[in-house]
Image (cartoon, rainbow, N blue to C red; front, top):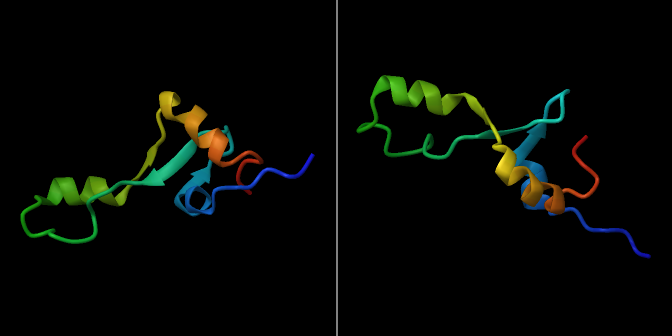
Length: 67
């Protein structure tokens, strides 16, 4: 059987923690920042943990995990 392909778009966007959780950068922190308040911009800078319900879909995209 041939090797499964990794979805490169997903591999570039996610990072795996030591405990196996996945981190991602939040959307909305690149442009149109003048109308967003300081607290919101500060929170957008921080990485977020992927929800458990989405992990199954990500595991399909990354059959061998992340390194």
